[in-house]
Image (cartoon, rainbow, N blue to C red; front, side, top):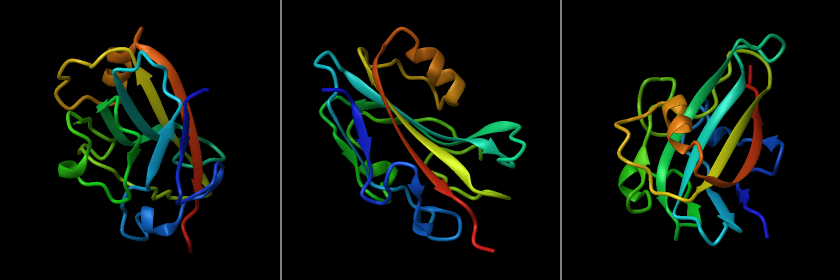
Length: 158
């Protein structure tokens, strides 16, 4: 069995509902996973958009959510999860708005892809002091046992 990541809010490569975007309540979608390797000690989650600012001419990857040290016993994150309700031990990194927590899709132009990437790790990472995506990826190097990905899309209603 391989690591899988799903959401009841949207299908793989499907449209992310507006409630999870800047045009709605901007709350995180529900996520669930299964099939982690037996040696998994923690999970990390990165949500990003490689189509910023324009899918026709992308210039950067915009980071929407960074979490790490999600406990190995966890198998989901509920919709609209707040810091206090994250699984015990979970740490938050900084997104590209310069804050912790989820920041939903808010593309300036076109339909963007949002990659929800879950990593099963063979370690509980040290305290990283609000890492950005690059710092978390560096800390995870050599510890990734498996990875799952769920892609959703969004385009602003005009």
